[in-house]
Length: 183
Image (cartoon, rainbow, N blue to C red; front, side, top):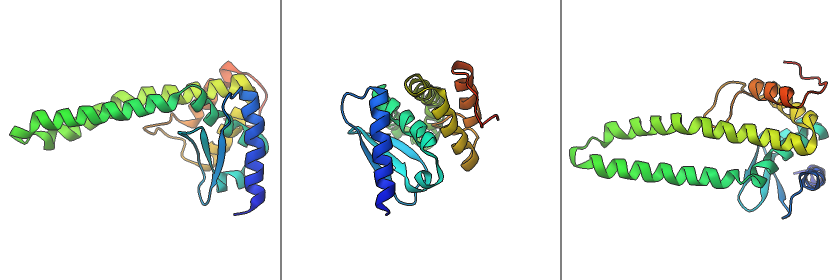
């Protein structure tokens, strides 16, 4: 992997960390052949090599700021707790339905209910990370980042992220500013 890419991510990450008021230093790792980004435990932010190559510094500031907001707002703990709760619910479902072998019906039903119940929580975490990053960095980097992602990826509903167009509208309303990404 090109060292310039790693240096660029480290430089931008350090600048954004400072603007975000990070008390503990974050580590920034570039993943080969990956387009996305994500915050993981240990104050680490993963950024895809393809995303770095295809994005401006302002767009990367927005992406990194969003991921750092997940760390600052302790969203990873919430997600971990939800995963644990899901596991407990599925184990209890299995234990209660095994004698009658109903778990073959109950498992898919419970998984469907869990997904429907968790979807608004995951979406709220994404909206919150966008807003928190925009409060620290201004709306423009977040709008630029979301606009870049919208051009490059799926803009529909997913289990973990609301549509990019909806996220853009929310940031525009809360942090109005001129931008290239009108739609």
